[in-house]
Length: 200
Image 1 (tube, rainbow, N blue to C red):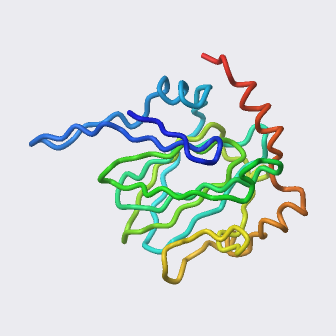
Image 2 (cartoon, rainbow, N blue to C red):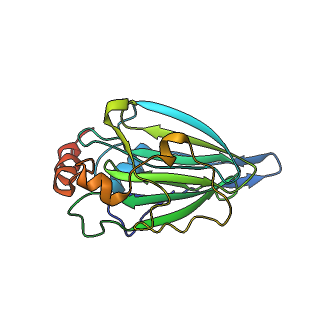
């Protein structure tokens, strides 16, 4: 498996080796050692989620307070999605920037999203099934969101009428979230990442 860093610190694209033959296929979806080598620390596995979305559904942009935050390892089991990560860490050199990676059931790539980064997806197929491995359990009081259609972020979502949850539709803009003190601090995130180095 190949783990490639994206331009946003803490975001990595994971490309597995897919072995295909007459029976079907086999791949290593997740390797803790390979990911830890690239990221600098292991992914603490605390919760696994599955979501199923219809075409045009946008989920995001979600992030959690750091510490402890919530790192995610995202894989598309069925269908295809546009997976988007945005840097909402105040003080980061790439603050306000975003990157997108297509995840699907053909190439079988995954995306690792570090604590403090905002994450969202758009379903590109009639039914897209995602699996999230998470470093921390869901705690509503620590969860936050930035509006996925915020013009300041300017995410290039696929054309069409997006379908948002009431929570995401009512989310603050990046500027509003910053003014309210909801965004993670880049230095605090960096210190948290460093604290995990050397873990088994």
